[in-house]
Image (cartoon, rainbow, N blue to C red; front, top):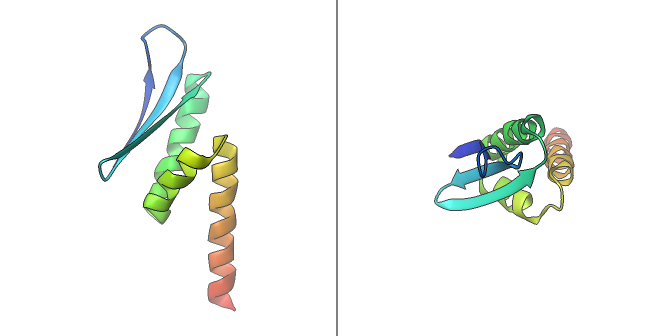
Length: 84
């Protein structure tokens, strides 16, 4: 699994989060390097926890905030369901 932050093309100011997980690829663009790095960290954590499902959420989400909220909601639901 790799989650990379790249500026494409160099010097353009367009930053991309590029994901390669089990020969599946996805990418999204962001306006700043800081935002792209923050998203990359969240996605790497989500992939560690949820695997392929995190990649599907990343592709389907209009924004990464939606994917992050959905990931948090699922984790909480699983924890509550396991404790009940």
